[in-house]
Length: 183
Image (cartoon, rainbow, N blue to C red; front, top):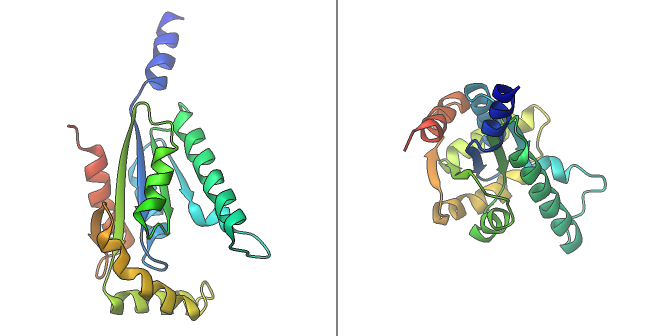
């Protein structure tokens, strides 16, 4: 019984990893996160877009606040759960203030936070989004909005990964290496 209690206590006090992955629409955040989830053990994945899946899709101060509160609530619950060692989160976080607000509202005890921006060339982004459009996953107006935000990710205080010419599986590997590096 004592051994069982020690195992539980060790799980409760194990260092957690929060891996935040951002980038403009269509850059490959979700695909990269799904690949990363395959590489890490005891991992849960939250896509911030899931908190926006509503009809009618309404973006105003009230819904923005609600979505942010929901994301922070879910991340905190995942971080407090002893089952998960790694929490992967992706979203379009084009301003440093969005990242900072999320991080400042987390229960971060025994939690290491990694923040990555997926970046790519305009040509690669257009190719990716056009592929999504042909599959019915996106609409044409996303191209303009995504291109407008593309340069914003260079300015963020994040690790940058250029995914212009690499797959999501390839992009996930350096993220896993950084998270698993023992310091």
